[in-house]
Structures are given as structure tokens and as C-alpha cells.
Length: 437
Image 1 (cartoon, rainbow, N blue to C red):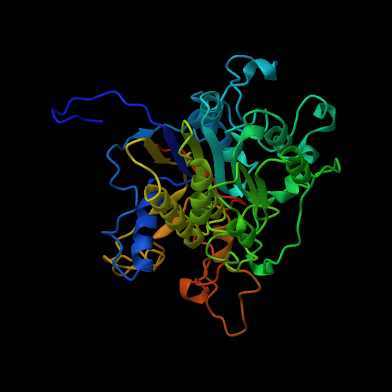
Image 2 (image 1 turned 180 degrees about the vertical axis):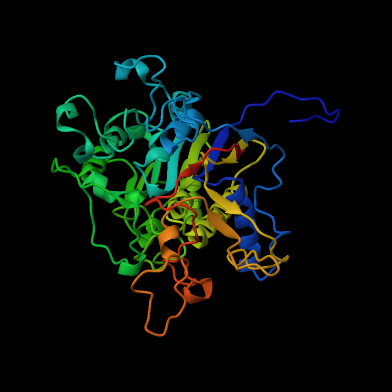
């Protein structure tokens, strides 16, 4: 804060909200900003994201201790605990020890907040056991140990899965709000009404089913029996909760990750948006008699869309994160609330070419007399193969046996469309450059 003489006066935030756009590198910010404006019928380049004018902006290095280009587990541990660690590791510092998991555990800002008596919560569009949210409460040598079925048999007696850590150990078991996806990992699966074409592929879509017969959601309900607690598995459930009265709120709105915002079921029986979950969380956490709250909000599907070269889906997720930040800004007292918006890493996406101002950001970056190419392209990923000729695309009338499929022969409006990548991989990789804070 500044007084009238412009001298810095000490202040401590009562409330903290950290927004993480998973995979939201600089290129995603720039293209997402333009996409937001164009979706509203404007040119796009002059658009503002809700956090563009925050008073302080910096850059963050993202490397893991063993990788130049990081993963979300190591970066989330660094963000939430202040400790850089190895690729794929959650909540542990293996520079201390390679053999003793207990000794290597590091506390997160959720531990610190709860020690101060603050209310705490996490909101995410991924499974709540996924790397970024899990770094708020879990400690494990492998981020994939989200449920017991993923843990090797010889290690099951020594390592607790991430879902159990949330339900059984501090700080996870003390969280006032948990909203996201991942019912499978808690033994609480429900029938899916998602259209087959919206069931996307890729390494990030691989969930696991509990094999120990436990339903951790039912156990959670029993633990908080007699207190003001609520569980929600669809949008109408969330809207029925008395948010200003409930002390503990658990919402799991999909067996796996939540659906992309572009295709999610918006009916009462469907899934809430990130902004609606953010609003609900703040209403539960923000109480007049409380020492404050700490909240982590993740737009996690930005990352997953990029991994499959679905640039159109990724940019829509950036816009939804922007809306969630705007929701928070309208709900809290900024004189006592610190809001941080950042990313854990970027992606191998590039924003290139010389398109005219106002050109469709999902369109073409043409140069005069050059073959049309996309403004948004990827260094690698599955989009490579979608742009190559194969037997299903060839017809008897086709006389063009060139290596690449012409862009006008692809249905670029399809939700499954992938932007071109230069190197074929089943999943596109992260990028290693600094991200904005």
C-alpha cells in the first residue's frame, strides 16, 4: 500500500487467491485475449483480460530440478511450497533425500493458511487429484498415483494414493471447499451423459477406478455428519447449497476431468463453469468472523487442449479463466485480498505469420503468394497426422497426391479439429520459456 506521501507502508493480505492457467504461456495469453474480443464481435487486438491491468507483473522461471522443460507437478510444488523439485513429484523435496519420503515432505500454502486459522479451498476444471490441485495438499513421488490402482503392488503398503491423502490427511481433509472433477478416484462414479464426440483422447484423459471397494465421498459425508456440509455432483446440486452457511463443500462434477467449457452440459444436470465454481467457493470461504481465506483456482483444461493441439478449445478455456478472475474481483475487498494470476508452464504453441489486424485468430497467417498456413501452429503433437494424406481422405477424383492435406479440405469448425504441428507426437509437449505472473 501507499500513503499520501507515496511511501510504502507494510501490509499483510487477509485473503489470498491464486489463479493458475495450466499451460497458459505468453502465446496463450495473447491469442486468448484476441479470441475474447473476437467472440464479442470486436477486432480483438485491443481487448483487455481482467488481469491485464494488475499493478504488478513479473516473469517466472519454470524449470524442474531435473528438466529444462517442466511438468505441472514440479511447478505446482514450487508455486505452492516455494521448493523446486523433480519432474512428476508432488509436495516433496528430493534435494533433501532420495530415500525417505517422510523427511522430504514440504508444506504448502494451504498448511500455512490453516495454521493461521484461515478457511481454505481449491477449485479446478481437472480432477481434484490432478497435479496442480494435488500440490496444495498431497505428498508423493509420482503424480499418477491418484488412486490406489495406479500404485505398484510392491509399494501399496508404503504409499497412500492422492485421493486418500485428500480425505484422510491434513491439509486436504480440512479444506472447506473442493470443487472439480474426478469421481472415479474416490469410488463415486456416476453415469455419463457426455456425447461420444466430446469424449476426447490423449494421455491426460486416462483416469483410474478404485480397486479397494471404498467410496471416499460416502466416507467424507459420514465424517462431517452433524456439521453443515454438502456434496454436489451436478450443477443443480451446487446451486441448491446454502453457500453462506455451509462449512464444508465437496463438488465432483465428472468421473474424469470436467468437460471443456465449449462443449459442457449447461443444463441443471450438467457441470458448472469455472466462474460459477469460483463464485461458490468465495461465498463459502468469505465469512465476516474469519481470519481470512486461501483459495487456489485452476483453469486446467487450457493445458489439456494444447496437448491435443485443440487451439480453439484452449483459447475458450483462457477466456473462462479470465471470467473467473473477474468474478473474484467483483466479490472481494481488494484492500485486504491478494490476487495472483499465473501459469505453471507454457506450451509448444506459436502465434505467427502476418495476418491482417482483426483476422480470425483461429484462421490463417498468410504471406503474399505463399501457401495458406495457420496463425496458431504447434511445434509437435497429434495435429501432424490430421494434416497428412491417408486412405480415408483420398478419393477416385483426387488428383492431388501432395504430402499435406489442403486446409480447405479439412473441417476446421469441428470440435475435434487439431491445428497443424510440425512433429508427430501422441501428446504435444510443454514449453520451457518463462511465464507471466
